[in-house]
Image (cartoon, rainbow, N blue to C red; front, top):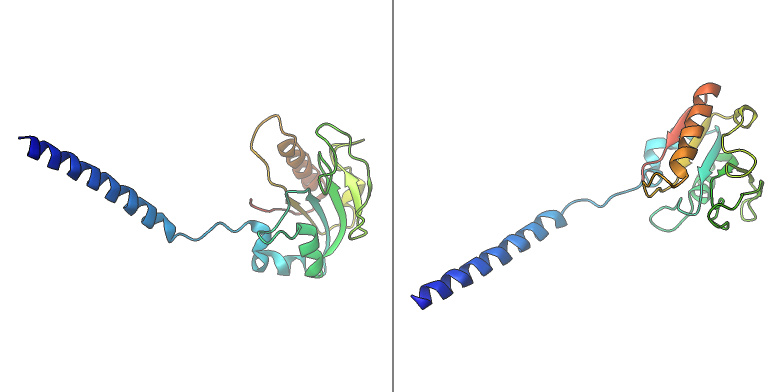
Length: 169
């Protein structure tokens, strides 16, 4: 009887290992996730010869590490403004620290703060824009400010009649 118990135990262990391996191999063939900004073919024609503002920060990266704004510029998209949330455009500010307006030293593009004197884009920021692109990775926690920033940007775009493209992360 001991032999039967041992074989039964060994069979259960083998079956469990087989199930785990089957699960591993069944998910390994799935395609990897591609963030919205990396899917250039889906949006490029909408942005050709258009004036664009980009809401971005240090998390706005393609899988190869290229920043969203740098990527759009490489595609000859007319990025005329960058709107910076908490922590700034390239992530230079600490949590809660006010972000000042300025100019990006790498691209020369004006940076307008959404975490300084204003947290909501004023109407005059949207004048002459054809698109606003929002590309920020959020952690999905209520006390982070990025979801509030997105809400304010949505409201401003609706009021000004400027389309908003939210890049999936």
